[in-house]
Length: 298
Length: 264
Image (cartoon, rainbow over all chains, first blue to last red; front, side, top):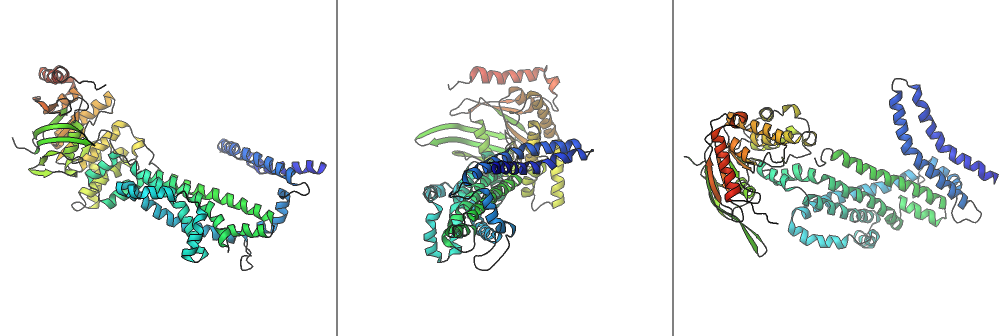
């Protein structure tokens, strides 16, 4: 029991140590002391609560899993097991025996490729469906059915069509993320106020100018909502798809780890998958905020 | 009297499924060059529909619009509209909003520098040059409408169409903007057609007031000449006999002979 007690101290002391310097630094800069103090306080308010929760959850996990015969490793064991993977993400021993960096970057490349295709095609189809009543009548029911098909259900079909893992994975990303992009873009186009259309008509913008100067900026907030949902779905789909197609990629890394009973490696991989998914989401959200700056209704 | 803008036997019928509603019936009107004409009527009488037909945004069921003896049936910068709710594009700055039209209308006739100067000239006309880099969300309602007027003026329209341009503004701002429009009309001599539901506004600004009967099947009930010399001064007119008489005529038309019947 005394072992557990010291462990607790170590666990809780870590987050506290990362916060303390930020606060301590502030009084040392007299000219902007106040501004820094406010910044430090705001940061602390946002950073401390999640850190406390993480610390508590890690603690619970440690306590639950450190019993002998536990199916899952406790965090301390995860760390010692995967230390090499964490410290050296760049090793490359050929084949699929590579560092996590290579696996993640292979997955990200597939997502980047498939997602870019679906963003272009999705916005294009969304504009068509939003603009043309007949296109909507013809295509919308189709979309509503197709979008409910789970991503992995497409994989065998795409393997049959492409006869290769790489394009199949990209196709799965594409087909998974395109629906919210189409649907949101179409809603955005349909919601363009009649006033803006009237302005365009009086000024006599041609269809191309109307597309670039009215349609896209007016629908941008909707389009970015679709893009943001889309990137989340792509990242969800890639791990599952890679488990099946094999090769280099975080999905197959997880599957391989499971087959070799390296549970700690799975946990580490999940950690990275979560962080990267979060960053991708923030990235698209930030881009949307930047692009639609000023577009908000006045 | 030379007809500059001619509305020739315009009927407008809206059809929705089996139901048809005749909104406008046999509208005939000729407007001279440089004239300021107001169309007044109760809400729902189809005056905005009429303006949309003139602007080309809606088609007439029968009849047509002639501008300098040529039929116009699609929208164009020769009939620039100042919309009721300003309709500035929120993602463009004040300058870019005006420039959007200028770039299209003068794409071949003016150089880049000339177009820039022309945009600034028109922003100066409405005293909005100081806000050139602001976005519509950063300026007040009155300022937005000024920019809307600058955007329309900058297209050098043959007829300027104002669709209840001051309707959404508070009384003080409205008076201020009315004075501005009067000054612009005096200076530039535009032909202006304005939709309004404000009797004082109609009498103050117009050379002629077109009074519409209640819909459905709204017609032109009466056309009143306003024989007041320009420039007109708001304060002096308050006690002017002609002004009061004109005002009285419009009020009688609207509230005695064509009282608005509540639908509900």
